[in-house]
Length: 251
Image (tube, helix red, strand yellow):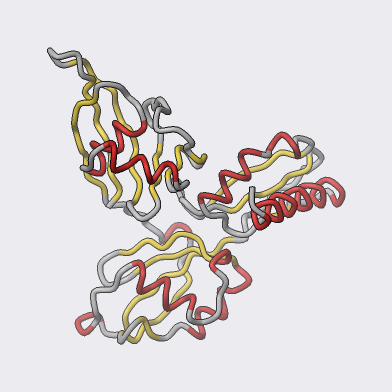
């Protein structure tokens, strides 16, 4: 681990200790994939408390951890607010990307760790943030690129998180990480090894350290800069002995 990662690990231990000492739920900020990997790698070191992870919706990539003392006997809520960004005049709105929305938020001086996933829809986006900064974002975010926008809070039962996916089918000689990535990303196995070596590939939120990692059904693979996909099924074998796989790719 580098110094920044060691400091993050120490921060996790301090939060777990605070939850145990004070007898209350204590929360992290939103963690990215690398931070989630560090979190999972050191859970034994704060085994004296339990924990829960949540990012505002099921299968969120960026998540907050709640450290919970064993004596906790009351209900708690994650400090997460969901906000919707919509154009003031939809017919004149630009086609905005995830990068556009994120850039507009960060240009307000907000730390990335205070913002969770951003789900981009047609002419609008839903994003998740820590509740403490929600009023500021609602007041200050008035434009994304050249499009005037309004930011509104959405009640949980109003949010319909629709993730766009496509199913990709193919065959592999073995259910190794690099083989499955080759089918999902339509690239050669050799060209994908560098992504694994550079620490850009995560399986179920944990850093993948070997291209020979064996996958199983429902494993979620995230590749920085290339999106994420889930291994849905392992089918039968072809006449040549190759395994038939089905992948759900998030668009």
